[in-house]
Length: 241
Image 1 (cartoon, rainbow, N blue to C red):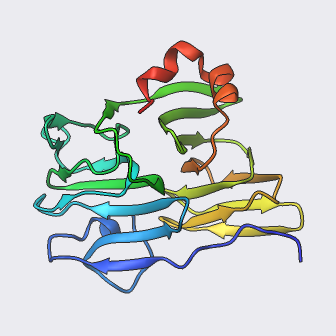
Image 2 (image 1 turned 90 degrees about the vertical axis):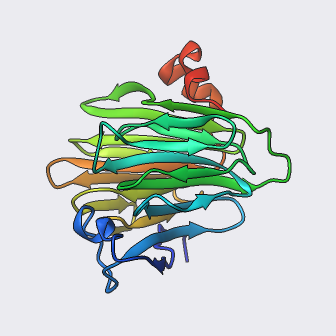
């Protein structure tokens, strides 16, 4: 059987009473009302999770270089992530803060964040990149934002208003209304807060939104030369760990 995109089994981690943003704001389809975290992908080469920061009390560290992409903030004027050594860093929806493996961070209250990382590593650099709103370019009428590049992954955000063709070997996370995922020989419906793994054997997939779509695309082996051509080599240091 030929390869095809597939949905990894999500792991829902229950939260406190305050942690209802993933249900109320993203409107993810799950039977749990209070959710601290939905782990969408967790394997040897990548990690993706949607997080409700709740009251902002949890300190987190990871064995992976990790991009913290702010999806939503209840208090945009006061939104922040505190990072060991670097202190309190103001953030806004659409911002991404990338932290090296082993660096601790604490979310401020009332945030929805997508955590996206590459493989586990024992050689953390201690560095951070950002927060940054990324660098942008357009593919037709679709806006492409490069949010982060680390040694073993890249994260992009797409604002989609027309069919978008993407190369395979990626994780696609849908942030808003359901959209179609089409490939040679099949079609799937990608719901709110859901992920699909597109294996390397799938040459191209097309995302087809119902109106306006927003998606995050994580790649474990980014093509730096292609990114340089698309965004400009001088822009890449803004988002590179």
